[in-house]
Image (cartoon, rainbow, N blue to C red; front, side, top):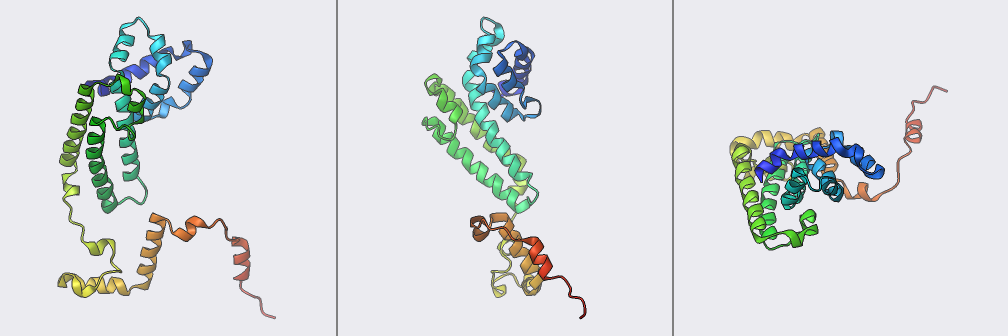
Length: 238
């Protein structure tokens, strides 16, 4: 299956090369945004046009190869989509070491869930596999479970330093801790941090922006900036 992942661009390139000969409505759909799509999204588009592509390559060596790897392609579409989601989290503007570690730890735990669920044919997290449930053999599911386990082990090796990083609790919630309960060498600097009103306000604002304050999420009222500015204009002398 690894070789399929590496060789998949050849499939998409070959399909793109014959797209002009497909029906007009399918050609426009194919060309829509394919040029800038990631491999995960490219697979998603590829599957959306699966029947048309397989039909076009009928009675060819490539068509036979596509059909023999159908389950693998559908599986890869879902797993690459999950990798894309993780990448987006890691590339957010406000991403830091703490949030990155949290995202990766969560993903590694999900991999274990994915493995267990796939092997018992619970495909709610893999909708592409759900579409071809009847085509999947037990050995396919065992292979996908093994692949997920390999991903888990490989990621733990690659990001071992980040996973092993000890993040003191006061780093995450510096204004909620009792200074007397932390290491004595950190008591003075933490006390200075907790006494800094400006830093406290910035931290609170950062937390609101990061998680979304409930009141800000629920309200649909937008402030009248111009009116507020007029009220605060300096008054001329009378």
